Length: 75
Image (tube, rainbow, N blue to C red; front, side):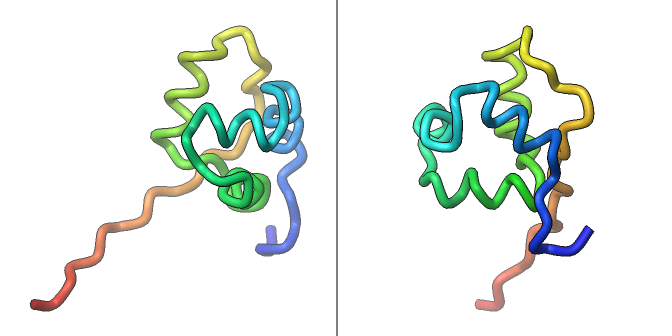
């Protein structure tokens, strides 16, 4: 999947949870950050939080973002 395409099941879930603005508010993020999830997947920590908060939502096929390896910053 290229970076410009969206993942339909992730888009559907965000809509099911109330939309981009509502999910952003719940996660204390900007709507732009949540919009990026539609292409990149939901970060693991936010995925766990939302899944616990909305256990009855349809989570099937939702894309979870891969964890990026932390980088060391040179002193």
